[in-house]
Structures are given as C-alpha cells and as structure tokens.
Image (cartoon, rainbow, N blue to C red; front, top):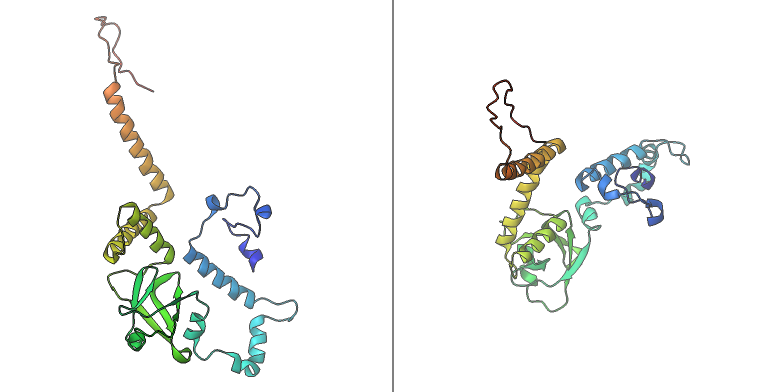
Length: 241
C-alpha cells in the first residue's frame, strides 16, 4: 500500500535519504480530501486483486469465511469508527466541554456537570471540529456539538490558522464570533482562488504588474516625436522597449 503511495506526486518517501533532493511540497498535487478518496479506491483495488498467498482476492476469501467471522464484525459501526479518533481528557463544565478553546454541549452531559470523580474522554475528528464524542459511564459514547452554532464546521488545521490570524490582529482571548468571521473570509478567498485556473492566476498577476509599470512609464516618459521642420522625413512615434 505504501509503495503505491510513494508513487504519487509530492511523496515525502519513507525516509530523508530516500527522498533525497526531491521537492515534495512543490510537486504536491492533491488536497487531503482528494487523497482520502484516492486511498479508499486503492484499498478497493487491493481487495479485488489476486493475493499471492491466498491465490484469490481478499474479498473472495472474506466471503468464504464470512460465516465463521460474523461475531468479529462490529455491531455499532459509528462507535467502531469513533474508537479510532484521537482523544483528550476534559472535565464537564457548566457551559460544556472545552476543547481547543471551543465549547461543546449535549443535554446528556447535564448530569455530569460539577462531578469531581475525574475527567471524561473526549474524541474528536481533526477534519471536522463541529462535533466531539464524549465517553460516559459504562463506555456509552454521546455526541456533543458546538455550543455556538454560528461557527461553521472547520478542520483543526483551518481552525489553528484562523487563531493565528486572530492573534496577529490583536484579538486576545476566545471570541468565537471573530473566529467564525475569519474562517468565512478565508474560505471566500480559497473559493475564489480555486475557481481560477493556474494560467488565469498568472495572467491576473502579470496584468497587475503591468498596470504598475504603466503608471511608472507615464511618470518618467521623456521621449516625444521631434518636429525637425523637414517635411521630406515623416515623424514616427518612438516605441519604448
């Protein structure tokens, strides 16, 4: 699987030595969401290819042994997925769960407010911080969402970038409304940029540069057609290169 990944443009290879002088960042061509889709398709391709040890496809082998393995299939697929997410330990406060300076709430947490018998495990998806999953007594897992619903769904990386911008603007402390507006502006810029092709972006930059040069030329232009009173010689406008 990793052999296939290392054939993609932008690979960092498995070590610094293997990477050598290859500029992975300059050659990267996929977003994380696009890579997720590619990787899922690669798993499907692998499972439908003949396996050298099985002498059949992994899918065919699974189907043949499905009756024997039925007890190993997770009953609750959502809980199974959540169990792989990263986690932090937090206390349940009066205004909910605090994670990354964001507040989350679920009515199921009301009975746990103010308890001093330890913290709860909070699992989150870095690709979407709009909800977290809180492990309660007996291993029960409940979903808690933004307490402030004006904040859009955002990835952890997008959130941290917005927070850095807020600090650079002198915004001190937690202001979720400011955060929501910064994220909205960033997404607008990203959307406008994505709508342009690479050639269109280059053309826009060149046109902008040429406009600046044109202003400078008008300010410093000193050459004019000269009237020598010699009618046998036509006057030509001087072209500047």
